[in-house]
Image 1 (tube, helix red, strand yellow):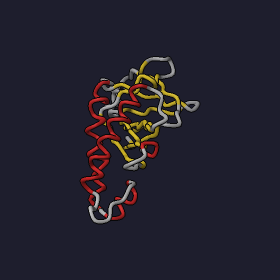
Image 2 (cartoon, helix red, strand yellow):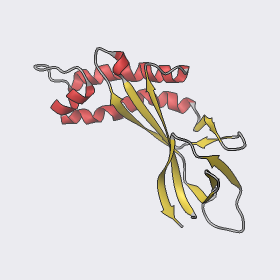
Image 3 (spheres, one colour):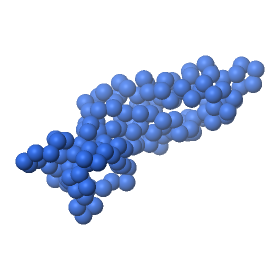
Length: 166
């Protein structure tokens, strides 16, 4: 079972998100989306939503990357830790080193259709075993005489994003 892994945690943010941090990310990414939509839209035959825009302009696939800058300042406020995902002992666990924004949907005139996903990726972790639906992990990757470990319960929004057998 021993492997080097990275975990990924994904959240979806839309107009119904209730956390203040999520609301700020929503507002700023939607504002930026409206600007970018105009840049990529056809002045002769304008479209209203992101998927229509992608159909008429393949370069519009850059919009999620461009929206990432709107979210980056908020992500930096987290100081590399998702505090809402503790380990099994309740300690703040989910450290991340980078993130990716994906644009699920949006509409130039209807903010209720704007929806983004943010996926956060951990640094390399050492997966020692899986015990009772919990990952037994260490931050130390190389095998030695012993490890400082922690356990993290399976979570519906967490997946193994990278796996390298050791």
